[in-house]
Length: 210
Image 1 (tube, rainbow, N blue to C red):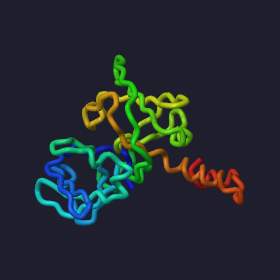
Image 2: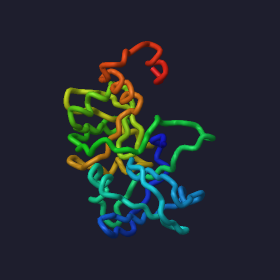
Image 3: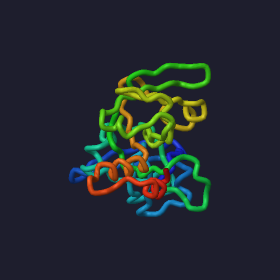
């Protein structure tokens, strides 16, 4: 479980493939301080498992199922990535509940600059649009953001200076891919509604945080 608050930007130092499994060696600093084999790390929003690490890098594996749902296989040596360790029960929870399970790869449709932010328009699939609400939460490349404007076929996010400085989103260009994960609470409600045998009650909505 993650919060969508990126801890640092890492750099891909080596990419190798062994028996259809892609191995990524990532250089970083902050998140190595308490790392262990088997830890879950969000890499651009995709939850991956640490298989080895040293004083400067850690390695993760991208299996076929993850590769098919992400653009991680398109990364190259020296590519930068957003990194976040699994959330701690002892710290403040600043973002929203993020599973690290990418729903789909979407494309950036438009980028505009305003006085104090950069407005990025993203075009997902119709099915994913249905899981969003205006002013709701969305995870973009592992970053917890607010959906500022939701339209029929796309949505806008605003990148404030701090987000542009501390994540890779400021490097994105029109046409670039991004990982999207919608709010997990909405998915639970959607599942309840779709189940013909279940009745949606106020008690059930409260149980899921609504």
